[in-house]
Length: 83
Image 1: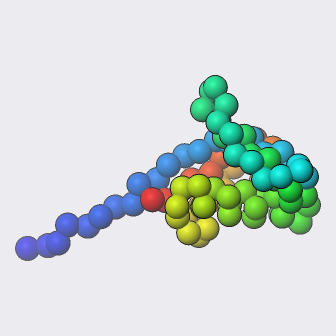
Image 2 (image 1 turned 45 degrees about the vertical axis):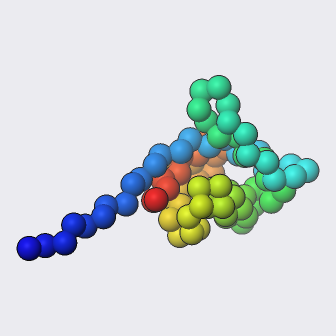
Image 3 (image 1 turned 180 degrees about the vertical axis):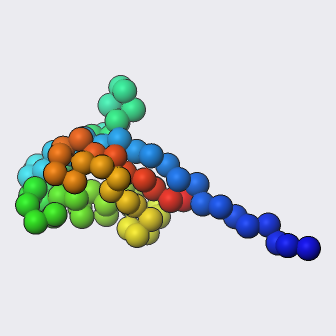
């Protein structure tokens, strides 16, 4: 008899990032996209890392569970979140 294996849920999240904002803020737009304003600048991957940290806190997962799927150098990004 084998034990049941719990498979992680994977959530796809579309994000629009605004770097170099006055404060960190997460909003939901009408189309379901998350709008994230960040104080981190858009250089040397700082805004992407700040976005991962904010998404991890919001979804209550570790930062390693948040994966940037597309949009590395764009404001429009798609993240995968393992729950």
